[in-house]
Length: 269
Image (cartoon, rainbow, N blue to C red; front, side):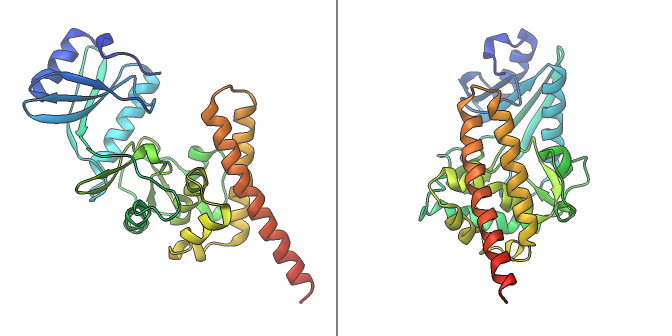
């Protein structure tokens, strides 16, 4: 849960101000993996600061720090600095100026995302501990295993269109998996942006990994993911959980229909 900047110990706030050359604070409005997240502006420019002190928050932020340091590429914000003080872990990331990506049909931002997906699909997982598909998603399939770096959360909130291109932020759930897992995780966000399930798949099909994936594996993934979010949303009043349950169920229904059509075709051939 996010808390206000004023909750930071004085020693921590002073260290941030010293590193940034000032402390004009603008709190972040999205995300929850760190207790404090804000854009800090000083004489050194802007830096995006995350800070955590609970056991879970520190573990999550330390994981993100290690992955971010290991990921060298044009789409990941650089780690500017980090320190520990008064029981807090604090990380300063390169600040990304720009709007969140628009993933609606025909949006030019889709081309930027497509380019980033091509790079990610060819990026081997760094030599740091990462989530496995089962640990990240709660289910597994043999074809989900792989050696590729998979962000797993490419929703608009984590995609920023900067003057220097698309930046992918928040690597707190990075996973080592097959490239198609990233694409499968993206369907829910494309559907949320106005794509039909069929349209989402047509867009994803421009990436070779999609066409090389067993349709039965895609149906398995879609069904398991939809059941997971249906279960989570049933016990929650959080609107975002119900949204994810709706989007994932749309894709699962489409995938099951494709499977039934294929079975009928095969039975008549």
